[in-house]
Length: 194
Figure 1 (cartoon, rainbow, N blue to C red):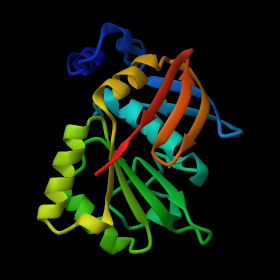
Figure 2: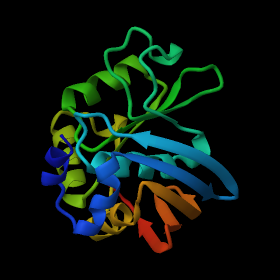
Figure 3: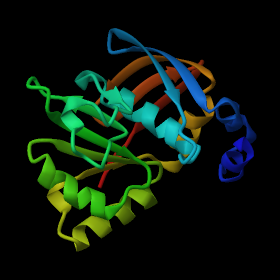
Figure 4: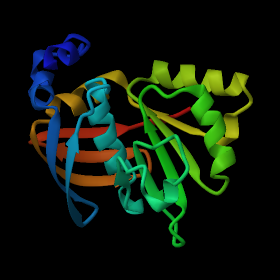
């Protein structure tokens, strides 16, 4: 089953190290804080999805994101959709909803109506994908309700290539900017907003 994930993965063989285990144990030291996180892939997720989820966790660090919240979470009751990450407001409602990688336009149109006070962020692994999603959202007149951030392809390849089954991250994240060391690999990246 693992081989089906590796077939679709198109970076160097160095990237395969995290996807053999399909889980990442993270020790993150960011902006003066420290957290531990375990990310495990679901069978239906493409290999890059774990790397995008970890990136979203780091980018949204200040909002204390919850990764892969349960459908039984009180903020998500009676919802058929679940975010890759979410952050809560003081009342326990959804303040931030994050999707990583491919996401249906139908979902992105429904969510802002269901959670009118939440912010919606979609994280893409390349600028081309970010441009395509923004164009599709604009054609459907959904522009203002969903924010789209994307990586430069070479920065995402460096990020994903530095991840291992046991990953240590040190540095700073501010908005769309990252200044990090991931398992002794330095990365300075500014994601693009579309």
